[in-house]
Image (cartoon, rainbow over all chains, first blue to last red; front, side):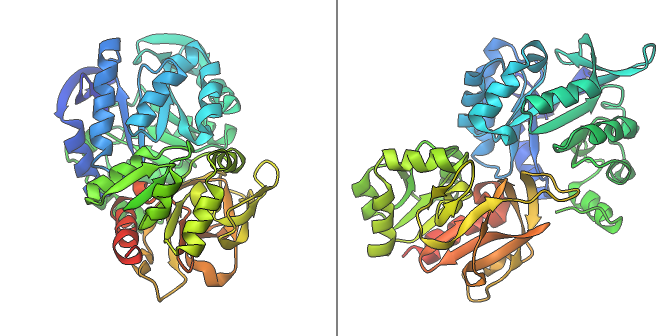
Length: 243
Length: 203
């Protein structure tokens, strides 16, 4: 769930955000449906909204009992501690990890590798022929090769990667299978695929054609186009191991 | 009252929230008198065995917990690292003695093809004991985050999960209970475990 000023929002290719609702209400509904984990990303992440995010995590974790990953604008170990104390189970680092990679190691040492997720927003750089890392909510191109960056953050202590294809985000045209195939050959921590889920067969594809450990979706669930129980049933029938 | 033992080892907030949600009164304490007066104990834990053990020692709680559990027969539920600490010893970064409340030891999960260590995620419980208040865990998924697991005799197993090796998920030795997974992160089934411990085991 992308959270903007305490509300869940969703856009397409990271822009044109639409209000979807209250985080705690939506989280409780997804728990009822059988979601396995929830990810909350504070997509504006200004200082004044830091405390709003803490409140969101607190209210969600008082009512919803499944793993919660929280990210957006986290710049220090003490930011991480605040969100963990509010009820987060994992911390997701994105722009801050690029700006200061040692933050990954500091967090992993203090809270354990399993606690540190590195979120990577990736856009295919067609001209130069590689996957490029973007930061600041997809606004800043870094010139960093996403595959090399993935390897590096795992060496630094990341226990999980949440990799979003910006080309696919919100388009409902399927996951970027190639990207995940490349990544899963390189690193041995769990990889969560994100961006592009449109139909149940997109989920089947990403699980059958790459070795990702999880698939994240927002739009299709927010707008009820796919329900989690139906999706899980379909995956089961296709031989994908699901809860 | 049920006491959650406070020894600065990891995230107790979510355990407390789960009890609150269930409407079960708990207190977070490191006070020996309070611990010995409790109707039940929860030993939480996230992190590494060695530092957690030292933290219990520093607070003088090793013998307090043993007294409470062995002499006063107070039921205890260890969660994740808290469960591992109930066993005799662990070889996580060196060799450490545990609380010795369940015979057995803690070793690292062997790396097998296709299975990542730590085990992070949901796994399905196989029931190993029929005479238990926790039989509802059969074929239910619970949420795990761990790199080490317990080796113990079959008689102590309530449930196991398959992760290349058979991993004890819930264990019991008389009034000593342990869950390798996180009940506070395992949805309804997890909440039911905390509720059952509080209402059926704790009297």
